[in-house]
Image (cartoon, rainbow, N blue to C red; front, top):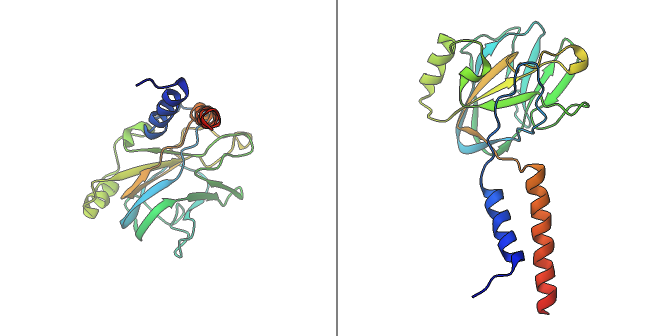
Length: 205
């Protein structure tokens, strides 16, 4: 049996879509223009843990649709503080509002310059701020969770003098995992694959 090139291309596109893309932590001083996407909830209780702060400004963390917003405020919260988010399901959108500058950011939305202000990782060492604070480590251990994602935020835009190190505020979330976002090239391949399949159907009719 012979397969036409459009079917082979479509199969390649399917493989491209199902393989998550891993993104390296951006070098300090370099804003990431890669959309981190949303965090995906696993349907079980999720805990938000205040992991670390290295910010002069006062900022508040929020979760879209969460009745207990703001979750954290670095003017009043400290390493190890924990908030139960409940049994979340599906994609979750977090945001950070810098109350000093009045600027708000959403994890999966770029600012006017095309820069994203959140970065996800499962390795706290990526933030280059030393060891995980003892209070944070204890709070994570107390949850008993095996799935923990750290979210580091950059609380200023480039125009505001950001250093783009993504460690101004860092939060840990249990039972939330990053959702793969298709790369622009992947989206282009999807379009080509769909067009090719349409061409094959037209020739068969």
